[in-house]
Image (cartoon, rainbow, N blue to C red):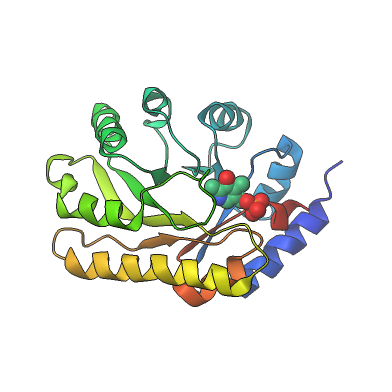
Amino acid sequence: MADCAKIKNNLKKIQEQLNPNCDLVVVSKFRTLEEINCAFDAGHRVFAENRVQALLERKEQLPQEIQWHLIGHLQRNKVKHIAPFIKMIHAVDSLKLLREINKQAANHKRIIPCLMQVHIAQEDTKFGLSPDELIAFFKQKPWLDLPNIQLAGLMAMASLTEEKAQIEKEFGQVQQLYTDIKKAYSADLPQFDTLSIGMSSDYLIAQNFGSTHVRIGSAVFN
Ligand SMILES: *Cc1c(COP(=O)(O)O)cnc(C)c1O
C-alpha cells in the first residue's frame, strides 16, 4: 500500500520550499501506479519519466489530465511515439535529434518545447553538450529552419557529491550560460525561459541559481 498521506505531505513541503516561479516536475520513474495516483489525487499534474517505453505504459494506465515531460536521453527512433502528446523534452543533446523532433511535431501539427542538456558534472557518464558545444550550437541558429520546436531553455544535472561548493559552482556555470544565451538571442527566442536544474538532493541549492523547473522523485515518494 502506498502511503498517500506521506506523499501528499512531501509534495506540500517541497512546494513551500520552491521559489514562486519554480515549477515542480514529479519524477515517477520506478514508482508504482498507486504511488503516482497519490500524487495526482493530491492535485499534482506534471510528471516525468526518463524512458520512453515506461512513459508510454504509464500514460495508458494513469489519468489523461497528466502532463508528461521526458527527462532522460532520447533516441531518435523513439521520438515518433511521444510526439503526439509530450509537454516538454528536457534532454536534447544534438541537432539530429532536434530535427527529428521537429519533423514528428510537424506531423502532429504541434510545437514541442525542448531543452538543451548541458554537461556540467564531473562524471563523464552523463549526457549533454559541453558549454563550448552549446555555445557553438546556438551560434548556428538551428531554430530558423525548425518551426515545430520551441527552444525553451537548458537542462543540467550537477555532480553526485555531498560537496555543496561543487554543486554551486556547476549550477552557477549553467545559470551563466542560460542568461548569456537568453540575452544574445532574445529577438530570436522570446520564449527561452526555462532552466531545469535541481533534483531531490540539490533542489534547494538550485533555488539560488535561477531554477524554473526542478525534477524531483525520491524526495516526493520516499
Ligand atoms: C531520476 C531523475 C531525476 C530525479 O531524481 P531524484 O533524485 O529521485 O529526485 C531527475 N532528473 C533526471 C534526469 C532523472 O533521471
